Amino acid sequence: MIVGVLRIELQLYSPQSLKEKRSVVRKILGRCRERFPVSCAETGLHDPWQRSEIGFVITGSDDESFDALFEKIESEIIRTGLAEICTRSTDIFHY
Image (cartoon, rainbow, N blue to C red; front, side, top):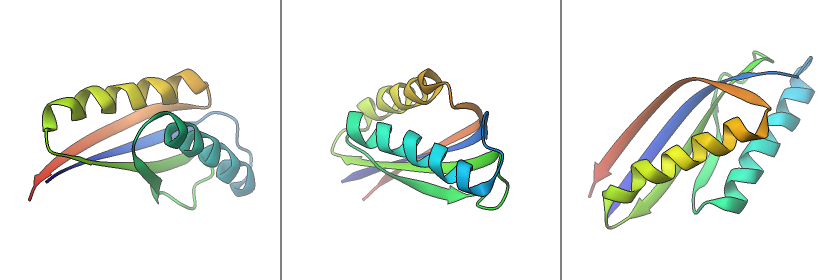
């Protein structure tokens, strides 16, 4: 089994409060869950209202497709127009 992890730090465009930030992050995560076979959650930067860290996890038996899927996820986040990707990191674990 192979596990792929993608961590993305976002600069959010519109929130003026933590409540608005949660709404924006929920929209991004919901859209990615609907379109891709991933598990995802807000994993860091919980208090700043204009920044967020979100994580995505996928499993499979072939890690060649992981990078392509991660790029599609990033493109989808950009396409929403709700945030800009500041940093990105990936890890692949073989079990």
